[in-house]
Length: 376
Image 1 (cartoon, rainbow, N blue to C red):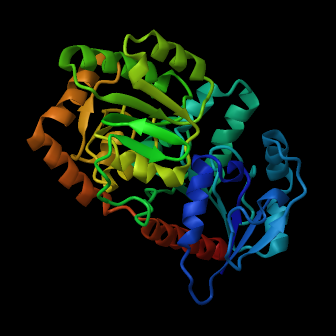
Image 2 (spheres, helix red, strand yellow):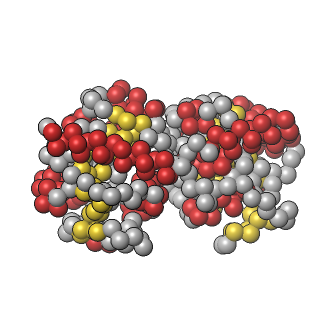
Image 3 (tube, rainbow, N blue to C red):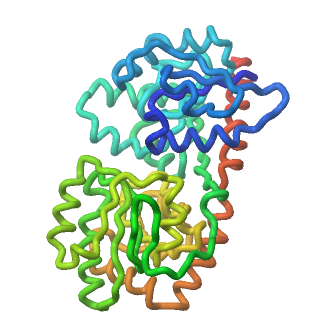
C-alpha cells in the first residue's frame, strides 16, 4: 500500500496542523508492504520528512491558500492517481480538499468547522468545505466534540473516526527543576511563582481578557506573589489583550511572551504553579494534556473538547465568569489535597495519549479505506 500524505495547508510546520503532521510523521509505523510518499510545496521538501527516507514530490503551486485550494479542486485527483497512491491523508482537511475523491482520501479535521464557517466570508468556500468533507469516504476527527460539530454543521460523511492527538512524552514528563526564584529559558527570564496559559492571542473565544480580570481578583483577594504568563504568538486579538494587561493594577505581574518555541514549553510548564486554560473553542486541547504530562495541576473551561480531553483530572470553571476563574486559581495553589489529586490524576490520564497510538490508529483507517477503494 502506497500512502500519499498532503503537506499543503500545514503552514510549513508553524501551526497546529503543522505540529500535528510533524509529530505524526515521526511515529508512522514501518511495516512490510506499506510505503509513504509526501507531496506539497518545494519549500517543504525537508520540513516534514526531515531525516527520513520518505519520498517527496514537489508541486509547482504559488504559496498562497487560494492557489493551493484551486489546485486541489482541479488537479489533486489526477496527481494522486499519477503518483500511484492507494490512499491519501489530507492533514489540513478543514482548509484544503479536492472536490471529489477518485483516489480514496481521508481528511484530518483538527478545527471546529462551525467556527471556520462563521469566520469565512466567501459563501462559495463555506459550501465547498461542507460538500468536500461530505464526499470523503472517511474523516479523522481529533475529538468526539469535533465529530459532533461536523455532524451539526451538515457534513454527511458516513464514517467519521475519532483519533485523539498524542503527546510527545520524550518532551513532556515530570522533572525536578531548581528552586531558583527566576526560571531562565533563553531568551526569557521568568520570575516565579506563576500561572501559565499557552495559547495564541487569536480572538475573544480564547478568553485572555477574562483571565486577566480573574488574575486581578485573585491578587486582590489573596495577596499572593504569583504572576500570570501568557505564552503564545500574536494574533488578530493581540492588541486587545495587551491593552487589558496594561489596564490591570497588576500589569507588572503579567508577562506576555509572544511566540514561544514548542520545545521549550515543558520547562515553562515545570516552572509554573498551575496551568489555567480558559479557551472555550478548543477542538483538540493538547496544551492541557501536555501540562498534565509534566506534572502540573490544570484548571480549564468546561467547554469545547476540554471536558473530553481532560476527563475528571482538571478543575473546571465558567470562562465568562472572572470570579469563577479566580476561585479556581486560588484553589489550585492553596488547597494542597486538591492540588495533589489533580497532579497525580493528570499524570496517569496523560499516559493514555501518545503519537505512536495516534499513528497506528491513523494507518489502520488508511488501510481500511485503501481496501474499500480497491473494491468499489
